[in-house]
Length: 160
Image (cartoon, rainbow, N blue to C red; front, side, top):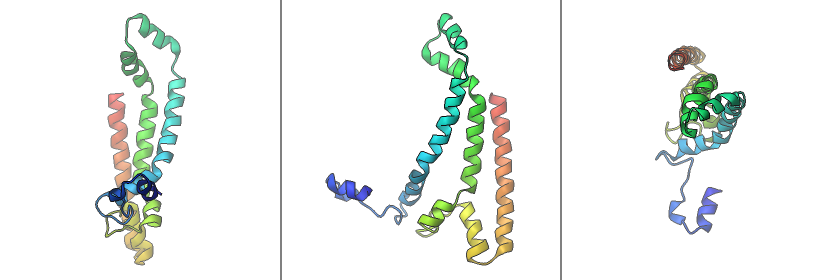
């Protein structure tokens, strides 16, 4: 579809095989496929956080002479820190577990350019028939995800 639009805009030289080009377009094309779904959930979480901020806090900051930017950084951002923590943890966990897009669209190719840890685990367990190796990779991936999540929560708690 993108190549069709580029053709009609007279940009033939920009056309390429988006999922078959190992020059960073394959992973980029897969990431763009998932973008609306990722941002939609984050948007709703942040919207709920902003709607729960008491307007009297913003008004008090305005009366103290704070600019809109200062109000955002000093009031809003501090009060939506729980939502920021939640979305960073969800993105971290989702990023380490996600592999279905790569499996369906490219099977990890071209070469191994779009192979992610979850797909590596899946291939070992089900494509190569090495269930033990796939399970071991899964456990390592779980421990890595847990460690990164706990580290992220600790850092966010200290900054919050």
